[in-house]
Length: 214
Image (cartoon, rainbow, N blue to C red):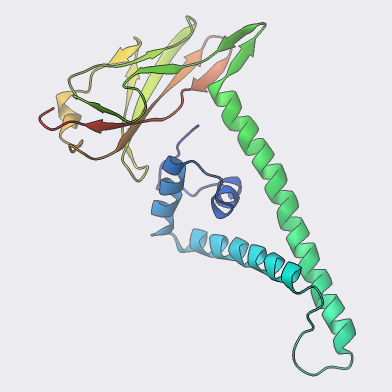
């Protein structure tokens, strides 16, 4: 899974997955944080929600006719339902295709296959949802062909706190950034590595909670 910076606009596939409720918790928080300050993305979400609402209403009332006068209410109703059906179908096609490419892209970032070898980055410590001392190194397992790696830390709402270039498979938070991490709050970390001849792969995102006094 890859987390984008919350100051950036989420791509249409991410927005569609958000509307459908398919995003993981960390990424959903990122989108919601972005929506609080981006009118354009708010309108995009509202538009998709309207389409889905109309689709749901159409299923409940398939024979509903529009209100108001007209030369032929029945024909008018058919035209409206036809336009609505085309719009909904278009949205569904975009969503399904987008979701496929989104899943494929994110999967390819986490796993590369080279012959029978499956290349992964796996966090070792801290494990998911662990309470930790910030003096403890963050550790992960990576393939031997790593040329360079980046470790990233995110706040509870998905905002990027800091990222560091690392040469080893472990990392200790520098004193310059430790004050940002408040005890009892949730934070997230991930590692992204460049493999020789393969490109970038990324680890799963793990949540951790700093302990008091760390």
